[in-house]
Amino acid sequence: MGTSTISTRISDIKRLNNKISFLKTISVVLLTIPIIISCTPDVTKKTEQKTEPLCWKDIRIGELPPQGAYDGIDSLVKKWNLCYERIETGCEVNDSITRLQRQSDRSNRMYFKSLEKKLGKNWKQQFDKELQIADSINWIKINREIDLLNR
Image (cartoon, rainbow, N blue to C red):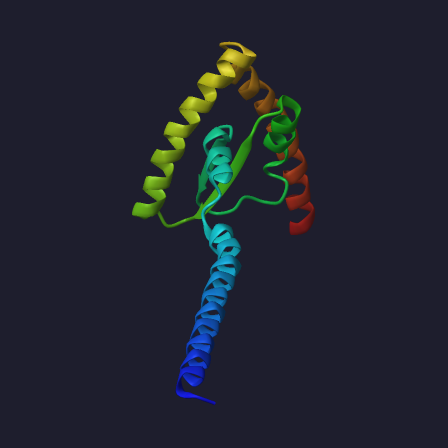
């Protein structure tokens, strides 16, 4: 074998190595594209969150009431088909609870305005009247249960 044959073979090997290196690079790129795509934020989820309906946020501060105390409002919320979320914060009021209360008050005003359009201007008065009746019935039951426990 002559020197030119060896140098030709060496250049052939270098070209082959370059092709293999190029193919490896391409395969790595092609394999990482699905990973990159899967890690980008889902725009549809953000859109869904923005179009999510408002909800009545009922912040309850203080000691938890006896079991069954919320039965009246829970049944009326279902009957009226309202979006309702009760948030119980405990007894201590701090800055984060105050902020939460302000945020929920703003959100509730918007939700109640949308309900006025849907259910009529006096929906809240009617709801409160029904709630008062349901609560009085529930509290009679709760007081009887408490009396039975105290005997």
